[in-house]
Amino acid sequence: MQAITMAREPSFDGHLFLKAVQRGIFGRPLTDAQRAACVALLERGQARGGVCARALAYALATATWETGGALRPLEESVESPWRGRGFVCASGQDFYAKASDLCGVDLVAEPEKLMDPNTAADVLLAGLESGAFTGESISTYFGPDGIDWVGARRTVGDMSQAHRVAGLARAYWVALQGSKVH
Image 1: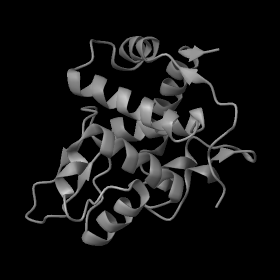
Image 2 (image 1 turned 90 degrees about the vertical axis):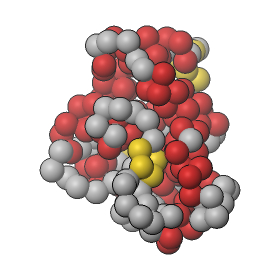
Image 3 (image 1 turned 60 degrees about the horizontal axis):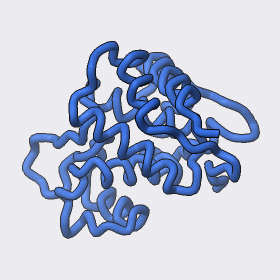
Image 4 (image 1 turned 180 degrees about the horizontal axis):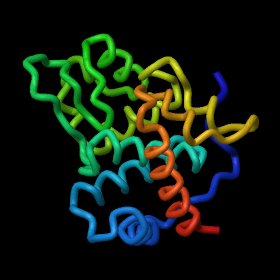
């Protein structure tokens, strides 16, 4: 599997990024939860060794879309310790075990940790990178062979809204570009 890290990815100014997201994506002040999620994804993406900025933009769009714009970890209301939680509500003990291995957090023993924005960000980023959600890695769509904003939806699932998620990802990409630290 090809990694989505790039040796020369820029750093981003969190304050500038949040202002751009507020203005260009939400069009209103961000809630505390939205702000925390943006910061968690931005910081976790950079901590992963410079995740490709397009993949980071796609992760932000996915988190926004999958949470209905709430941009905070969600929890399904079913009776299971391994119910869907996080930015992408994948469920089941097998998924929790896979996410635990990817992130180094024992989510099988403590599944509620997926409600923490930092843990949810780690799971989303690692899941996109490894193909944990559908078997498709984000590096297939953002790499040396090209950029496919619409096709990247295959990393999470349902393609029916792929164009909308792609548009949101492009808006996050613009916000990231405007917050680069050179």
